Image 1 (cartoon, rainbow, N blue to C red):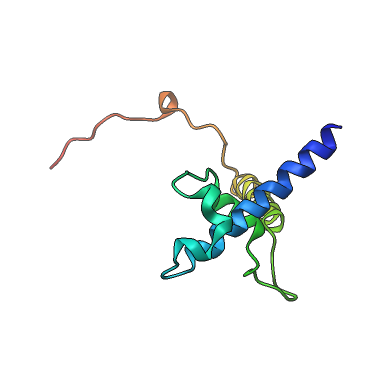
Image 2: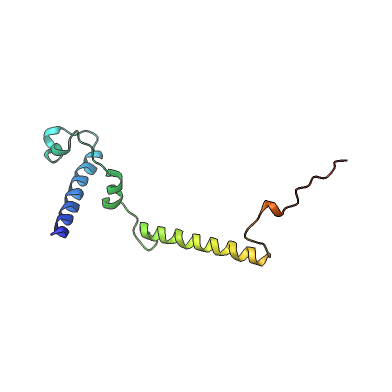
Length: 112
């Protein structure tokens, strides 16, 4: 039962989004010519921009096209690689990962 309610809600959101999406791309429209938007006139449509990124058809296609999931995975891989490179670099140069000001010589020298 819950799945059918969810599917119905998604269908309704997509339908309402499509009406607004088409309407926003018009320059001038008479009220009588677009009966489908009567129910949505003078009402806010929350999450319009997010739904546009989901439902809009003008997306990249082809072998180099990426989904949002692909982009997030790519960022995660880059973050791990950067962290590993920093650790390896510190080990290569015999650097300690933790630096403390307590162990530094901060005595001043006399200027001449």
